[in-house]
Length: 392
Image (cartoon, rainbow, N blue to C red; front, side, top):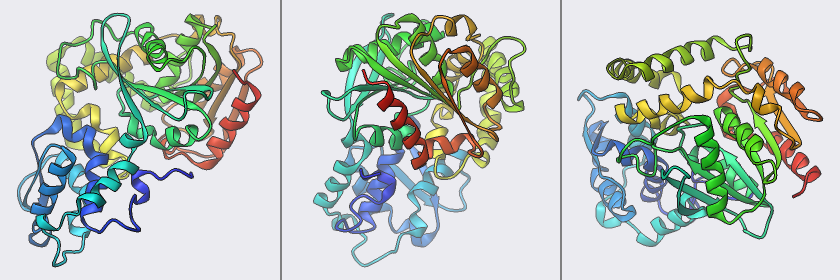
């Protein structure tokens, strides 16, 4: 990508380490830190010497403080994830690694290059009154693309997609109802896919876009399809990427999908059981998520309340039979999966592609589900070619 991301080492040429590296890490952790605060991370004696510098950086960024404690102290999954991202032990401890050594201009340069600086944040309201956090990137004069995220995931998880698409399009996205804007307030009145599709249209309205291409990632493919069925005049094309798709009782599903859906249903039916499931998952889930994505993918597990809302969102997505909605989709469609995706069954993507007249089906030979969010160049080449064929 031509745009520089937080993970690409923003400011590496001019911003001094370790302050700039800590600033990059704290910014990437911000969604998690905002709901975990306060958090204490483990560190050995050498790494603990960076505690004052870390405190100065978080103050400069207006982020929640992160305390540094002895490595031997017991820590939970989330503290370990934060610690791994900060990588205090990997930072060289130099003579100027003190709170007084923070170069404000260098930290500000990191902020300017960061995802949050790249995007414009807008407050919006869904049709049922739920507050939403909308993000836009690129020039409003360009054709609009609505990026529909995996439900419950921070927008930063799709940073590579947003930066790449913003080179040539006006990108609009939003973060899931109840988990971001207003996460500490009352629960939304509903999480069904019609409500989620309404959030998509509300994000379009707030961004000032009349018509748009819609790109659905993972579970986001479901509200993307529903929105295209509800308001075909506004959705000019539809692309679905490794969609978590359900087409009735005989729909092909992976073991992961079957097990996850059963767990979500149990959590939604019994609040006490949801707490038990959450506690159990929090003891083990960190080991199953790639380290480079863990600080984002684990966000909806950070608290019991967030987890309950995440379950409600995704239970609605996984339990929705898309067949009636597909019958009402008129937009040209691109359906992308991989032959070895063992998270979202590629057979369901094949059935969706067959149900959409004139759709383009792309089955990559390889590509695990989470690799989608790393944004391989070939993915963008495929999307760019499709969007070019279907201008607004």
